[in-house]
Length: 455
Image (cartoon, rainbow, N blue to C red; front, side, top):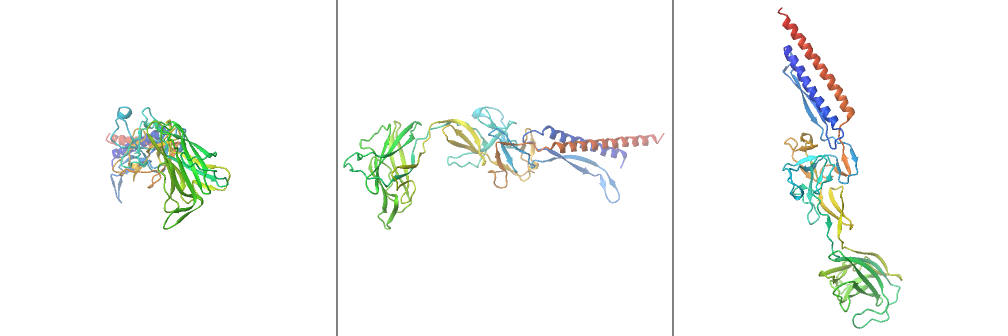
């Protein structure tokens, strides 16, 4: 090989070390960049000719060696929308090409990132520090995510509409050690003269207004109690009131087979006046025991069901020993008007919008995208990547499933750059570069001596 070839080899070494120095420079500059993945250097030797008799040096090439699979340090932050991935996988993101609000135009390309420093922008989208929009699955009416497509997550539901009460759960014990009433009126309204044992619950109408319902109980005989339901402000206000008799113990159904309720548990419910949706005695113990009534607060009929537990089982309403009426649970499913009160990300990726009425609405779920060879992804500006043929297809899946990492909320993944290691690489690149310059100098001097031989 000629001296000129030796010089060419040394020059390729200079170029390779310069490129390695560029990788080190890029790594050090991004040592504090969220989600940044460092680039190492892989040196490749290209030969001119090599066998057992002769070896002619060729050149060296510095290729980037990506570390997309190397985990960076996960650090907790105060941002409630920030997320990090512990393990393999990426967030699916998209880029805006203009527009605002619901009219934002997004790039058709699907991009990926590990930079999870997301925050809500003025249009309600979740955007990270590099301007990429987080994508996720929208939620179906069934409460399950629609896994057929990904779309930028937008939080625009700032009001939680009121929900009128449709169900009341009552768990209480009617005291068995109290006397029955002296007399039962023969005609409407069937309310005995004695004072009842009572409980009051607040329910909600169609506009979210709070309304009061009073439940009054009288013991008629050994095993029977009479219930009067009194909804306040009800426009229907039936003259005979709303009355139901509840029987405890004894036979549940005529059979066959004959099924008896355990003492102190409900065996039958009998409607007396203006109570709708009453459940007759079922054929076996354990069936739900409930009764119903309708009210009108000026916005149309509102049907309400009172759940009393089960027939023949000691759940919900019972009659056991005691002299006082004790309520264990009296709750309802109505919801008043709610205003936006913040957003949280759950560990399964659910994006939950919180309201000041205590309710939560799940608007989307954040999946994790995995690749067979993430190191072959194409790098983009802002710690983002594009899929390539070499990386394999993008597999979109739930967090912590199918081998992908899990979400760590209120956290970000820091750069995987190690400053000490980069400085070591810097020293090596500098020394190697200097050594190659010496070879260039030596080759030049030898070429000069060759030229001077003809003098």
